[in-house]
Length: 326
Image 1 (cartoon, helix red, strand yellow):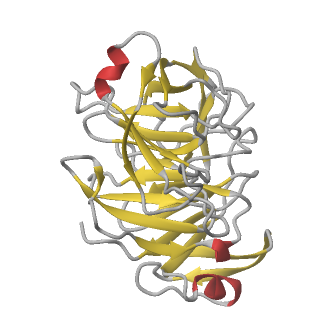
Image 2 (tube, rainbow, N blue to C red; image 1 turned 120 degrees about the vertical axis):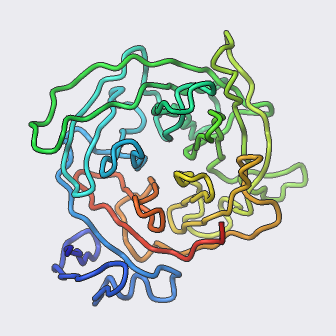
C-alpha cells in the first residue's frame, strides 16, 4: 500500500490512498489530468525528507547493489557532496568527494570501476554543465559507490571519498551536457542538452559522444568521440532540452528526459547505443508540474522510471510509460 500526493502549482492539495500503483491507480483531480493523453500509465508521488543541503538535485541514480537507495547531487557552485536517500524519500547520508570541485555537476551514472572489473560498482559524476559552451574541457569523477549502513542505523556523519578525475574535451567545440550513462564495459556516453545549428543554420539533433574505458589510463585531457545522434532536436518544442539519461540495469533500454518529456530507446548491446532506425517510445511529463525536473533513473522493477527535481524536499515521481521492445 502506498500514498499518492496530489499537487498543483507546487502546493500539496490532498492525499490519495492507492492499493496498487501497478494495477489499480485511483487517480483524481490534478494527477488524473496530468497523465491524460500523456502516454503515462501511472504516477506515484513520494514525499521526501532529504538532507537540508540537497537543494539543487540534478540526478536520480538508483543503486543496483543496494536496492532502495538513490544517490543525488547538487549542481553548479555547490560543494562536492554526494547525497543518499531511500525509496521512501528519507535522508540516508552525505559524502564529501575529496580531490573534486563542483563547477557544474549536472550528470551522474553507475558503472563498473574499471573495464577489467565487471563485478565492481562506481559512481561516475559528470562536471559537464556548460551553459555558455565555453569550457575548454570538462571533468568526470569516478568514486567507489558509497555503502550505506543497514536500515535502522542512524544516518552516518559526513564521510570523505577520494575521486579519480578524467578531463574530457569534445572534438568539435564545447557543449553543455547534463545527460550521461555508462555501459557495462565502462564506456562513458555523453548527450548534448541545448539547441545546436548545422552549417546551414538548421537545428541539429542531440549529439552523442563516447569516452572509451581505456581513457582512465591516459594522462592529460582526452578527446571524446562523436558516435551518434538521437532523434531529439533540442529547442524544437517547449521544454525540449536534454537534462538527464539513465541506462536500465540490464542495458536493454535507455531513458532520456527533457523538462517536458521522457523518451525510451531500445539499446543495441553490441554498440551500447540506441538501436539504429528504431523509434523511441515517449510520454509527456509537463502535467506533473515539477519545480525544475532534471533527474531520471530506473525504478527497481525495471519497468517504471524515477523522476527527480531541483528544490528543497521536492517529491519523487515514479511513472510508468510505454516501453519499447527490448
